[in-house]
Structure formats: C-alpha cells, structure tokens
Image 1 (cartoon, helix red, strand yellow):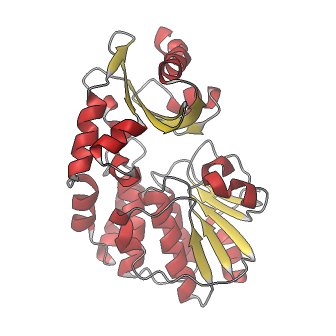
Image 2 (cartoon, helix red, strand yellow):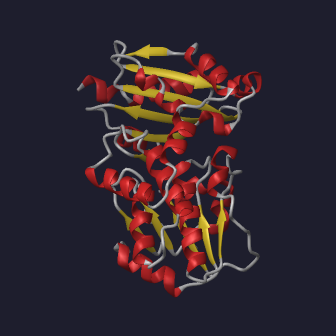
Length: 316
C-alpha cells in the first residue's frame, strides 16, 4: 500500500525496536537516509539499528561517527532507498516478505513492503526522509543535516542531474542553515580522489568501446584491475558516470565484475534514452537517467547483450 509522508511518520512513531535496511554497495543516499532516520528515532526515544549487506565505506565515516549498535530483536523493519529486495544482497533471504515500511524514490520500486512511501519526482530518497523526519517532530541536528545533504548531493551528481528540482535546492539550503557542512561534503565527495581511484579510472578509460556511431560508450572494471590498482568499492563511487561524460555520448555503460562471469551493469543516459526501460528488459531497473542490472555471462557476451538491448533505442 502506498502512503503519504504523514502516515509514514506516524507508523515510525508508533513502533520501537526498528531495524533500518540499506542496499548493497551502499552509496551516500542509502546511508544518508539510514543514519538520518536512526538519529531521528533516537531523539524520539526509540531503539534502532542500521544494517547493510556490505561494509560501510570509510569516506562516509562522518555519517556514522555517533552510531551505537544496540542488540535487540527487531519488531519493525524499514528499508530506505531500496527499490527491490534483490538489492539487499545476502540479506534478501532473511528479510524477503518481512519489510513493513519502504521509503524510496525509484520509479522501478517493486512495492514489496507492507507500506511504501514513494516519490519518483525527487532527486534522492534523502529528500523524502527530510519531510518524514520533520513530520516526526524530530530536530534536524547538524549531524542529521549532514546525512541528508550527503544523500541529496551524491544522488543528484552535486545538483547536476535532471532529477534536481527547485524543491531540491530549497531543502539543501535549509539543511545548510541547520548546520550541514556543505563545502566539506562536496569537496570530499566530488573534488577529492584517492591514488587508487585515479589508477582505476585510468584503467577503465583504456577499455572504452564505442557503438552506434559514438553515441554509446562502454567501459569495464574487472577484479584483476581492482587488485592491480588497489581500489576498493568506495573508490568506484561515481565511476559509472564517466562514459556518459564523453562528447556525443547519449548512453554510457559501465560493467563491474562481481564474480566469475558475473557483472553489474550501470547505465547513465541523456535524452531520449530511457535507462530504466532498457534495464527493466534485462531484469533490473532504476531511473530514466540512471539504472542498472546484473548479468551472468563472460565479459564480451555481457557487453554484446547490453549493446543489443540498446538497439531499439538507437534505431528509433
């Protein structure tokens, strides 16, 4: 059942021993939502816990610096920025069919939860959490403001993507007035790169292939490349946007090896290519401008599949 902000806030205030689930390969939005909600629930006297199938990247350490894990048996399970239970990775079997509330902004959301607060017109799920936390009557402290600002700026590409609205900027401005460290967050998220990040970018760019007259660019990152560069998962944040930045490219595709003959395909597009539509055909989903899916096939076959899936888009 789809619900509004007020109802979501009411449900959270009625519950206790709340488990907050974030998606695998955690980004700034899922973690920003998760920890903002955690701190807000603590203000209201609730016991809460944040759980992710993967380790929290060190670059987001400022979000969880005051997090304290509590041992309790969850009575209410909430998912934030999770469009599909498949995105819970290894946690999926444990929580499939047991999630009471989902708060998300992906048009591809599977409506798997008992209650779903979904706004596809926001740049980030953190925009939605901003309103929920206010409706809960919790104070947006500087730490909560940092969490929500991180989610918004990272999911909006530092306010560059087409999903950004006037409301996005108004929320960001309010968060800055409430103490969000906007300059430091934007510097760390977008203007600072590790040596290993520079190395993996260079390797990835050396793999670029062009299709459809240069309108589609494909790069890939293998596990061997990660080992040689010394890069880890946190170094890959934003890499998927690189092929779309090439002049004339309407669709940028990045394949990241996740196991033997297993790749995560990330697609970033410009008008008129609908990434969500293409990825849905392949069993995935996301937004019009950013979507993805998993494929189990050798690398060249995986590339061939995504190029073929795009044929209809480029032939029109």
